[in-house]
Image 1 (tube, helix red, strand yellow):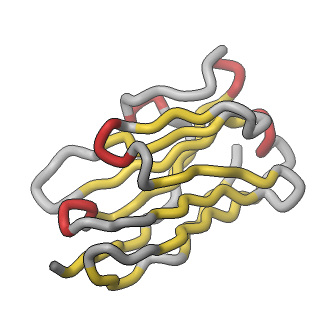
Image 2 (tube, one colour; image 1 turned 120 degrees about the horizontal axis):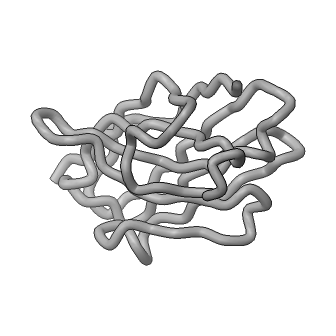
Length: 127
């Protein structure tokens, strides 16, 4: 199973940008579909974006479509989330997650379907 560590969170003004990174350890990284989730205080963990095993296919939740870009580099065991035009409602802890390819799907919007999680990184967007 892969181990995941996020970085890149911080405080940014509305309209600004941040790039989150997720470093994965393990030799089977390219067999995992990878995703980003986020959780704001008092709210459920919600799906943000996902990328397929090869990185050729991506999927976004409606609220972030057109503003966020997910990508992966299998040679470096890395996943990225470029976040532009940030809004205060994007404030949350962001988590990197992986779903095993043996499940026959490269993403799920339900967080309980994922097999590996990072510890999270805080993103705060001020008005």
